[in-house]
Image 1 (cartoon, helix red, strand yellow):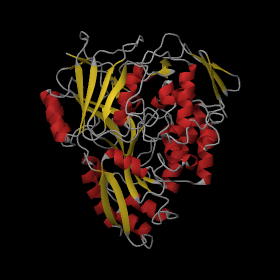
Image 2 (image 1 turned 120 degrees about the vertical axis):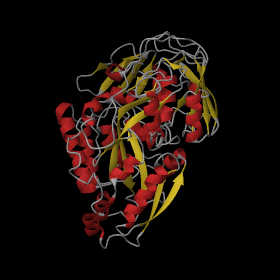
Image 3 (image 1 turned 180 degrees about the vertical axis):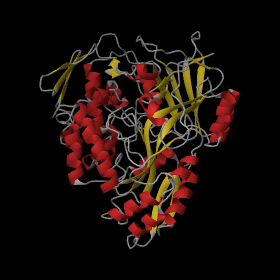
Image 4 (image 1 turned 135 degrees about the vertical axis):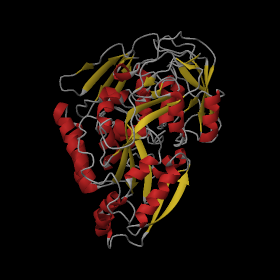
Length: 549
């Protein structure tokens, strides 16, 4: 799986993906033939390494958000459906659409009655006010805080001047949110797992280490967690909503290698390889079981894989020619090949097809078929400092082999790379700390929701930089670009997307905080006994919907 999530609509990517340069991209998973829904049993999921948190205001990994989709209830949520139908937000805890003021700066939501947490406590408007206040907590350092910059008073809480967000009030079943400016994407932001309802116990806990169990108001709840060993989800017996909840329990086992996990899922002693497989396995399994026919599923995703260059380090600070040189030096073809069958499409700029504003100019900025070392060396000459760099990456999947390719490519322009490997969660935690001692780090981002703000502002705005849990891991902080991002976020309609498309190209060509290498896919392998499979365009594997044959 990938770096912090990001929900996204994948189906819109399909048509464009099939005509672009890169590895084979298979069509989005289609609905399975109708089958009887069976109740009960334990569904077994395997992770090779642990997720970062189960705490809903701290969790920001793809595999973690699959859990959050099963346990959380939100004002608006994505339905448990395949394809486009699963990408359309609909009221969940909200009784209906909000009442919006004429100036677009005040939203009033009414909470429908009858919702309960797994403890039996009722869900109220305060449950949603509490979650926004917890996200804003200076102590917690939630990565969700970058999404509440538009709410009045959030900055005061984030700065530690007060404890509650003044623009959020709750009275009975009425939740009011007042904004600093109109926000066309507010409801989509609030549909992220960070903003699911929380009970008073969790609201009062702002330990930045997070909690390992908590009450929730969705179909399931996190009943137990032993870090690096196991996570257990159980049915919320108080849940009366319309979402499916077929199995009694979902058991996560943590720590086996990808090879052992593959064997377990193929034999049926486990049911789902939640962090994917060894890259070399996908072709064999696709040939054996077919694609989107019951065991192997591959769909395009709104995701981008990139090499971030740390602006806070001497090597890249005020060194635009070298950052450009890196983009000409890397071998995008070889890097993508290491990820295996159906892994994605080679790319050279930020916004993938399917994200509004993405421009159909892939391959016009930097080479996609192999390095241009002549150009790279012209740019790098006299710009490599002492010629040494620290390179951070993951210790699993294709990452170690890709690191070797990067290492070789960068050596060709005079950079001697020291590769340091970490478990995925450790890499993410460490690279998000301001001042972290790396020059390069490899990352992949899947959209939180299908809007260019979630790629450009969230990943590159200097306005949201803080001590820890940063998404802007290149630590790019240019006042001019920060202002342009703020201006773009206020726009609506076609002008919003045209502006963001221009920003994408401008940043990729003229600021160059990253070397983008690919746009990705979602690859899933399940056991033969897995039934009721639903691929969510937003959260990937739908744990709430699954049943055991």
